[in-house]
Length: 178
Image 1 (cartoon, rainbow, N blue to C red):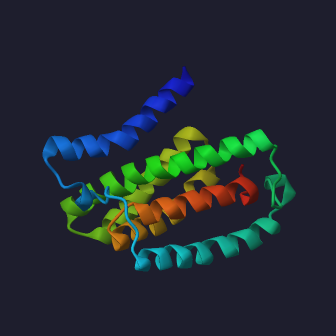
Image 2 (tube, rainbow, N blue to C red):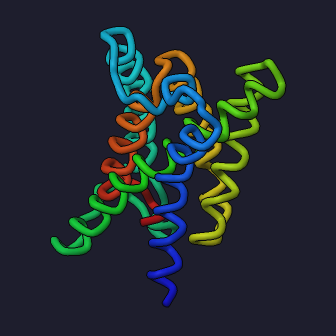
């Protein structure tokens, strides 16, 4: 039953922004829901990944064992495959909903893109507490800021999806909370 509820929530988060645009006669591109990458976006994603994942990898290699470290972890094949698939799917679903839909609506209402990125990142971090409790889940606020900036700068959710998916793939082997 819990899996069905999760599937329904995921479907809502992925499809509702598109239905909203259709119902309100909104341009999907304004919500970043037309997926594309420019050369600038590709470079932005690469730079953001280097700035975040290189230090996090070093930290993970020295993370205390009692807190799930040090990385890399070696999950069994099926668990790794499950985590990879879930992480990539989560990137598409969460970025469509949070960065495409919520961030755009907040930016429109407040007329301030950076405030919208900040507030959306708070909602994003809090949503992770629903799935798994623990203070480390709130740390998703910080990559949320980066993903919000990538969506804003790239004018599409695709840069934030790519960044999010690669971070989730990294987490399968390196994150101390998996």
